[in-house]
Length: 359
Image (tube, rainbow, N blue to C red; front, side, top):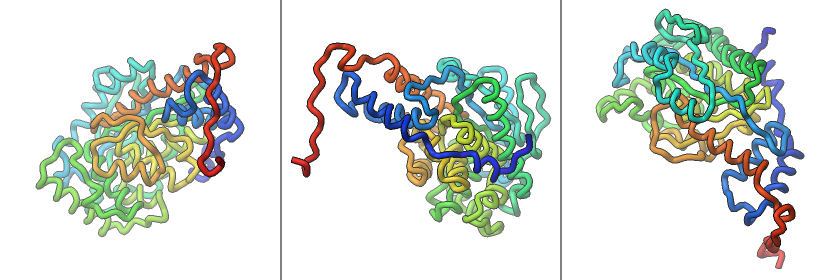
């Protein structure tokens, strides 16, 4: 079936309030002081609201790694050459990358998608959804056409739909693309109004001189292209990346299918920001996995109203932080299913909390 982006947005509904309230009530009956499991309790309530199930579980989950190249690498903004992108895609497919290790630990499937790698790749496990052979150099003109940006978003939606049809009910965002922190910084600057110098980070580990150069490239790209901050697809097409657009589609698709979507690091959070600007309700379906070392990341999470679960000083991408957060999601689900209530355990419950102004 052929969808438009607006069609997908039309399928995204608010969380199911009754299920969330029932989950909160159940948590307060468990053998612990109310709220004592902190963010895990908030997560359990959110998952109930997303799924409509008070005690959900997610036995089948997928980490979607979108891969694409960036023409802006011509400007010398990365510590690694562009050919690393296709090389890393093959590493994902052979199971040798960090995300593969963490995925195996979390019993998650890795779906590697070529949405815009600037090389001809072939592998039986590769999802070939190439929109074009990498973006153009955004410092000189638009990264891609609007039609290409839309096609990349819808490719992400389609990957989710195919996985849902096979039983997947939870998704993690991952990416690979040398130069994608530059595109992400440009999108962030346009959508938030924050100066490029505050949005750029060291990415793959560039030095101070290259960091200043990277900020100037982002400034130039925005000046040349004049993206419309009120039109997220225009921003994607002019200063974005194909994998960022693809992940935007993954997030929209997950929300449309009432599936939680775990957001990884800076690049994934930029895709989340684009999705949220397209449809505010998508933020309700997002779980922020961790706070990365990219300086702009925490500001993007604040824009989304998300609080990260982990603080591990990571900056790898690939979906690695998201994969680690799956263990916390499992913990929240198991608490709901396996922990005794005061009544079932025969334990006396504490007195309910009394508000100061109610005394």
